[in-house]
Amino acid sequence: MCVLILFKDVSKRYKNGTVALRHVNLEIKDGEFVFITGNSGAGKSSMVRLLMCEDIPTSGDLIVNGSNTQKLSRRQIPKYRRQIGIVFQDFRLIPNLNVYDNIAFSLRVVGRRRREIVRKVNTAMELVGLVHKARVYPNQLSGGEQQRVAVARALVNNPRLIIADEPTGNVDPSLSVEIMNMFLQINRMGITVVVVTHEQHLVDQMGQRVVSIRDGRIISDTSWEKGDTDEF
Image (cartoon, rainbow, N blue to C red):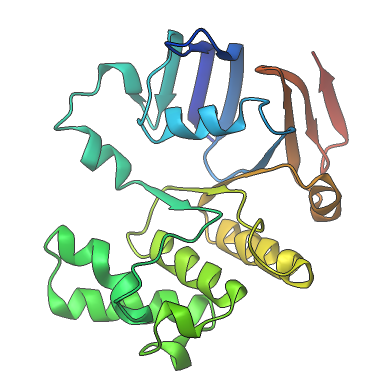
């Protein structure tokens, strides 16, 4: 498998002097499922912002699918982001659009044809079990259902990579494992999945690679399937 994400000695210092990441070295291969864990303030959100090109490293290189994010122009960033599906803790659905239109929104923005939109949106709704909710609005859905819509929206552009940032933070605890199993199903489709979370008890149930960070540094990298653990 090729390396899809490469953090190469990446550090991030903000203008207020806060150092969020310190000399991070990390490889994530195409098709992997990886949890990134750590307490609040550990640097998880900064990693997500760098991956989404919302920020750039202060030093080091971040290479995603062959693109060095520091060298992307403003015009190149939208195309770069289309290879990534992002799922947020707070769903970020458009309240005045129904389920179908929320999922279709990004396809319409980039000018996809109606037939393609219908096919892709229906496929995404089937994958998350929401075909019967196509004409329902976000405020009529449970938290778990809203997160399913967000997952479908992330999938609809056929991304190479899904990033889920605290995806179970606003759903009932009883649904957390269900949401994670959905990401496992997506990963089995060949899509690389990176889940950022502080819910260690949930991570422990899933049997996947776990990268733990503290104070902006990677402190361990554990592959449960191989039984290998690297301590830093």
